Length: 194
Image (cartoon, rainbow, N blue to C red; front, side):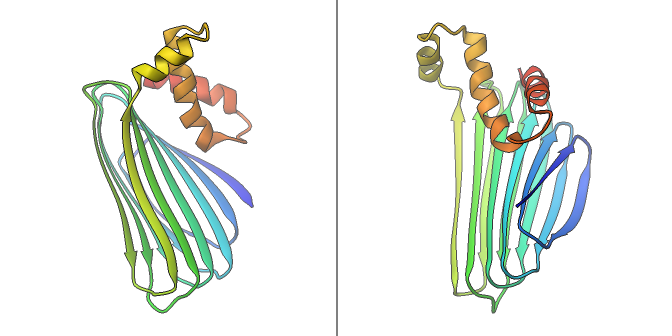
């Protein structure tokens, strides 16, 4: 599978087609409003899309549409959101499966991690299925940076600040694993979000 990386920190209104097995990794950093439309038109492709949203002190909206337009396609769309101080975010992930196509597997996951009690989040994972031969799922999970997790990590002799960095870096690594400037990017994004 081809591995592609995209980094956005501005207004984004993009449309693109994916025509081969691909892993797309995207980092979206505030201030940014995102409107992204992805079309899957080729048969027999597998696509994995990983999105990392980093927000702090901003009101942001994201809209991601994945349009499945042919048979025998597998797609997995994973959205990870890190919400810093005073962030307000609304993300809508949509997988649209056209009529009269078959053998589709689709999965949409949205996960948000609060790093500040004043952060707000709205997640809307949606499936629009217009065919019968489909296996599809969607989910959303919102959680705070757990005091229990922090306590456990600290019991191993790690400071609270380093414990937070470990948890945040695990989210970043999900999207940037394999990126040639991984360490540099993880540090940059941790500094931004904290």
